[in-house]
Structure formats: structure tokens, C-alpha cells
Image (cartoon, rainbow, N blue to C red; front, top):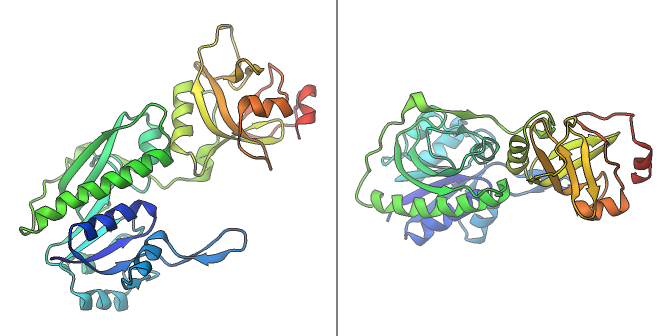
Length: 328
């Protein structure tokens, strides 16, 4: 039975924790990010990994900075055989990587060396990938650069959004980790070096990334919506109103005339809300007006008529078509 310290923070990490328990190994401590203010009341809320550990009476450590010398001494005192991380949120220094005799391994949500970094799930969708997966790798001082122990792939479905893919990959991560832990029962398994020349990186997701550029093709805009839903979300402006876009679909529209990108080409109960893109058309299937609930486009249009010819833009505009003025 291995003594394991687990380091992780969000929901994504929970199936990996469950996999360790199911494999019969002992989690001697859980390291997670500090509690953070949440909701309107800004009350401190524990990360999902902390809640999981507390419910099972497993010791929890929440250092502000993982490289804090005092915390490193605590970790040395725990004397783990192996450290497992999954979406922890901090880079481990060499002093920690050197503690466990079997090393430190990470559950990463991409097929490395593709999509190293903070947002592999979202970026794979934004880029229109059709396959992704889980990589279990040895950690080193670089950003997701360590040797690969095991990979498990899965297709990305055409209309899948970030939350749905996240949940599937979290489960797949647990399954992959369970297989890798069997290898560690026989000693430290060999890893294979990554092909560094094939590496790609993804940056941290920023809210401004969700501003829709209608000069892009329908395919690219659809992939952006898929990748940024539900957080931070994509948005556009109609007049001075900010409209959040939750779901779109490509639309084969019969009247293939010349249209300005962002121009409404249909807005009725039969076709829904259809907008011209730089190339192709999109139906805005689920949208949300300011201060309103998320609605199907046909439901939104019943109370917020939008004229054909109106233009969605990437910034607020005072040019509101007359028949839109009742929408606020």
C-alpha cells in the first residue's frame, strides 16, 4: 500500500481522489488552495477537494504558496511514497519534487505535448479539436514538460461544451490514474520523454476572450462559444445591451445574399435568431439579456423583438433600431 499525498483543488480532481481510495492506497494528506470568497456575501468557501477530504477525516493543508519553507518541512515529515496532483493550481518547486522516492505525477487534461498550461479543455474546444484525453506524467520543474507514463484518449463530440467535456475528462482522469497506480505497485514505472518540438501552450482564460468577433467564420465562433461555456461565457452587443450567448448552431440559411458580419438575417418563431458571420451563419439557440434568465432564442424574441437587419457588435452602440427599443 502506497502512502500518497494528493494535491488538487476543483471538482476535476475528485474522481482522481476516488481512484486512489478504490485502488487500496492511503491518502495521508491533501494539499489544496486556500478558501476563497464566493457569492454575493463573499463568504469564504472551501475548495471541492477540501470538502471531500474533511468528510473523510483526511488531513488538509492549504499553504498560500506551496514553496513556503515551513510547508515543505511539513511535507517532508509526512514522508509520502508518491505525490499525485490534479488541477492543483501552483507549480511545485524542486524541493517538493525531490521528496517522494517514487516521484510526483500529474493528471493533465490533454494529450501532451499538446495543450500544456492552464486551460487545455477550453483551448481544445476553441481550436475545434476532435480528440483529446488524459496524460499521466512525471512532474519536473517545467510547465507540463515531464516524461509521459500513460495516456488515454477520447473523442470530442461536435456540439460538446466545456462543462460537458470537463466532466468526462475528470472521470477519464480517475480511470487513467487507477491504471497507473497498478504500475507503481511494482516500483517506479518508466516514462517516455515528450516530443518537445510538438508542444503547444494554452494561456489562462480571460473574460475578454468571450467577446464575439462576427467577422470570424461561423465554425470559429461556434467553437469559441463551446470552449467558454459556461465560464467565462461569450457575449455580444445589440445597441447598448450586452447579450450573453450560451449555445449556437451552424445554420444553412436559404437567402444567401450579401450580409454584414453580425447582421440579423432572421428573427422569428420559425427560424429563431440567425446572424451572419464572416463566413456562414449561426443561430443563437440560447441567449441571455442583461438582468434576465437564459432563454431559447424563440422565447427571447417573444418579449424582445429584434428586427431583421439589426447588427450585433463587439462593443456597445447607441444605434438601436426603433423596433428594438422596447426590449430593455
